[in-house]
Length: 373
Image (cartoon, rainbow, N blue to C red):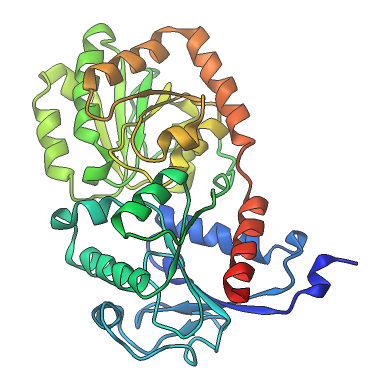
């Protein structure tokens, strides 16, 4: 007899807000988590999701509940004592805030925390991000539990939020998307020059000025190499521009900023890059690492946050502030076909550690444990 027949149905309020608007890494994590929890093959028939959205502008579908409160006002209320939202959420057994915040409820609450950058660098965070941090701190102090996507982040949460109610559950790999073999027309023509690719929003946490400096060192020995930076505009745009301006003119011309790219373009860039450079100052998981490993592209990254935990042996790592070591690792991948092949093989093996089925099973088990407790 299936084990699920002996379990009572659990109604799980789950924040679907990250699915609306520009899809970020958190948005992908939430989308793929919900898909895994509702996958018929997962045999999680005792888990009934009640998606909710805290936004007055998002176009919600018939399966989503819109909380009748603007997000900005909610952040201000939830950082202090606030009325409970159980009835508005559909009277769930547990509520899962998938994006750092969760509304006040009488039932157990679980909060997904992906990285702690904004908690450790509050003065550098935008006002709405600071308010989310205040809500997170208040909820945890009020008894909410935390789930992280890495043991590294779990350790930081325990320290920064003074709680042992933390569990780490790895996410699965990015959804694999086949790309056309032809170069997208939207890309500038940089010939057949080998290029290093950087993916992600241009925010300080991504440490891209250090990558630009490392490329400046690399370019002296590889005058035909290029650096391609693809990502939406963030809070580090000016320092990145300044770092590029400090390069000599011929090297600066070989740094291309593409801005935000579509899925097909990103996939083509990943498949054709000599390496993915990922020198972040902090990461809660790092989907681009696994995306590169999926398509056989070596990863050169930093030792910050969860990167060593997620990349495994399929990456060359260096300290995040050491541009010289980063340049040396990039040089190694550019010049050594043997090392290139080793990283491709190790990355392929590393992917076997991640599964959305496992993510869903562990998350469902956490829901049951918190409700039964």
